[in-house]
Image (cartoon, rainbow, N blue to C red):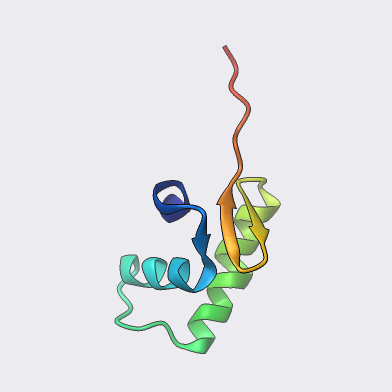
Length: 66
């Protein structure tokens, strides 16, 4: 979720468009948007990398080990 790190907090629709551009889609249809939410956002949430607050995606701070 590099787009979240660079632009976050970011609205999920904008994040989906940015992701779509990176993988080569000209536009993000409802089907692609739903897939983005289920796979990309869902996976990042499970891994503890992001948090959803309403329609916004926020990057979570990772613990730093010295």
